[in-house]
Image 1 (cartoon, one colour):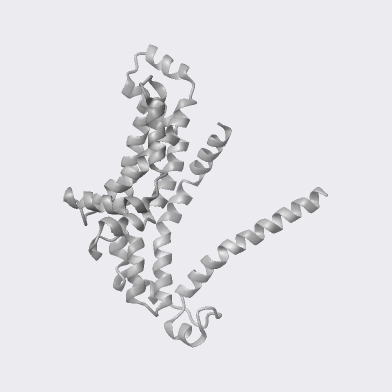
Image 2 (cartoon, rainbow, N blue to C red; image 1 turned 135 degrees about the vertical axis):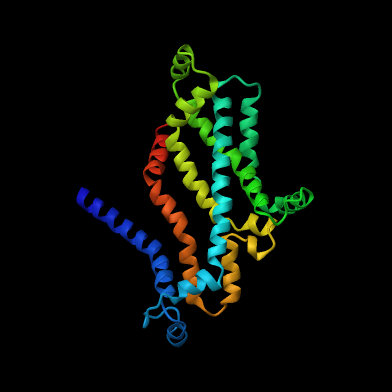
Amino acid sequence: MNKLRTGSFHAGMILLSLLWLGPVLWVVVMSTRSFDDIAAHGVGSLPQSFTLDTYRQAWTDGGELRALINSMLVTVPSVALSLCLAAMAAFALSRFRIPGRRTMLLLMLAGNLLPPQILLIPVSKFSELTGLYDTLWALITVQVGFGLGFYTFVLHGFMRDLPGEIQEAATIDGAGTGQIFTRIMLPLTRPALAALGALSFTWIFNDLLWAITVLRTDDNMPVTPALLGLQGQFVSSWNVIAAGTVIAAVPTVAVFLRFQRHFVGGLALGAVK
């Protein structure tokens, strides 16, 4: 009975994995086919050709290189600034008796429950009034502002459950607030920071809504809006569009593989708590 149950579970997991990997493999294979092959046999047929020139077209002619640079210029500062500010806020709210701290946390969390569509026009107008419209700083500000509440809420839960005796012992040894935060709290919350870092990198890097809200010129567009432009430029070249999609997915996959151990550790720690 147990063997049958185990075999059924494995078969179900294999089926789900194939359902998830199928479209991914289809895009990768299509990105290596020539235009003539797809035009003659269709996008769903077996490949009759192999070429990597599609990646060159997407990289240079499609502007993927510029878009990836813009995405990294937005994503890396946004993630670093968001986690830094969230860690400091979570440390203060979890380790000190601040009046109204519960209300602050609820307000931070409630801000993330608002539908982003109702904020598009106010955010766009505000960026114009501040002179940041159509600059990467506008997108960085938006990403930090809308992610800060959620990151603070998550980190607050991790820091709050850390034993208070650790902070008391450090205080007795003469450590100040800054030393306790940098040398004790941050190392102990590293799994949570790594998990949030991987998630926030993926969210910000793949964002489309806020990018097209506060940016206008093609030279400032990150990779996701650039894929829309790629579809317009190579409207019938599905192989080039597929190659651009594969290129756009590489950074997020690399970040997840790099922080996979910390990411799983952060999820497991949160589950235990």
